[in-house]
Length: 346
Ligand code: 2P0
Image 1: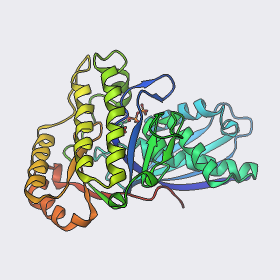
Image 2 (image 1 turned 120 degrees about the horizontal axis):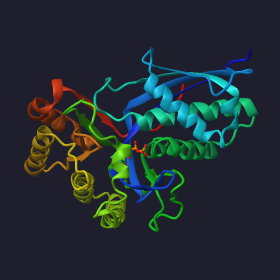
Image 3 (image 1 turned 180 degrees about the horizontal axis):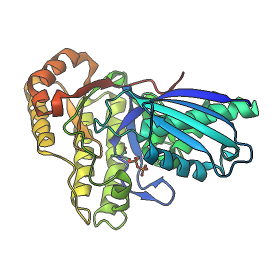
């Protein structure tokens, strides 16, 4: 029986303008803008063969070599949801192996890298099956579209540098359907942004992102928040086009705190930041004032800090991290990351 194989490495991304709230089938309530990472990625190896007369979609999923039932169920549901787009899924039996470079349970979300790596494998297999090798642009557009259906933020991981997802009058070809690459929209001052991920806690968060997005539906501040995100995107893009780090710092920090403000004012309310999240934020602001280095923080849906800064200040910031920030990190854990070039076929 013929076996087909595909393998991809795909990175995680950190949103600078946050996607928080959606309408219908993974349609974002506001546009988001992200930076694709270099060192935090998932590697996925997929093999499949014709399932014969077996029912359903036979599927086995291993994470770090171990069977993972919860992920397996999620992938099975996702596969069912996209068979309309990729009908061959339903004719095959699947074996999927995945691993992440970022430490297991470091509190770093893996859906963006995990889903995008899986989708890229599926599309490679589709190409093998049909013998039609779509051009690169089409391939990645489709990858972004299908990733979005699995996890919104995953659609942005398909592109290196910066990516923009969601319709906005600010950029002509921006769409809710998929992300578009956005490196060309920014000044060369932002070609080498570094991201130190400071692990404040690796515990499982009490409220999933899916639930959090859902709580935006009846949120008192939702419509204002969506307007704010659009306005912040406008300011950020204008600042980044000019190479202005001061604008970058101001908008990126506002976005991070607005995201968490939405969580704290949801009904029911919840808090994902921890005391050490605030300790680190204070120290970063003080460091910026004292050193003049435009280092700033952003947050994902969790307590960990993403410290963003220009690559030209790597030495000073590294010293700041080891001298002042690691005491506030769980088991001194941090990840030395930065802007990356996007997925790679293995
Ligand atoms: C983002 N986050 O823009 C925002 C900001 C986290 C904080 O989107 O329900 O896993 O799978 O579409 O993408 C995390 O939620 O949510 C997220 P689904 P996702 O990155």
